Length: 229
Image (cartoon, rainbow, N blue to C red):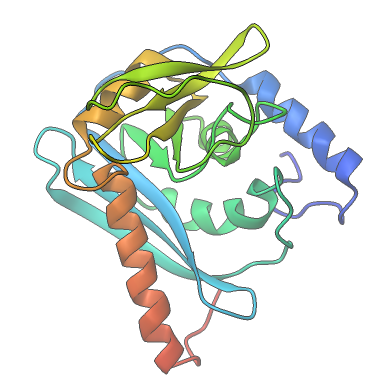
């Protein structure tokens, strides 16, 4: 097992080596056997390195909720840009492993990352399941802004390599950044993102997970004795 959940200190060179190993295991083609359920994964922060991780499973066709998992977790790694997985993956796995879905959507980047190893990649490689990331801001790469209409997108490139898409999920709203996590193609990730986006800028699975995690974080602030894992 790669030492992602318990990283060897804050030696960025060693952490980059782990990210490079994750990137080599990412599959950028579709491995979906079926598409009946979709899960959203997100983390909401409380204070003092305490957070709530949530995973919500929706019916892909109707977007009705089917299952949800939420856990209070202790963050053991500091926030360092481009090393988010070492901070958030442990908590995210606690909920994602307990909520079965055909594909997992993460509120973070996949291969649209300097070392092609964003949080969605780490989750997908460890779970060995289809995952992709939908982020609100760019981490790396260049792209033109897509036209102001739902469904329009431009390719996000780093040099000659396509690492994601800048996708307009709603008109008159900022676009989102979609990228492969594991076992899925960019084309399919864009399709799923559009199908699962309704009134919010982000897809409903991520929105549902965010709202669940945020609710528990607020409630827990009134009762800080809740144990964490």
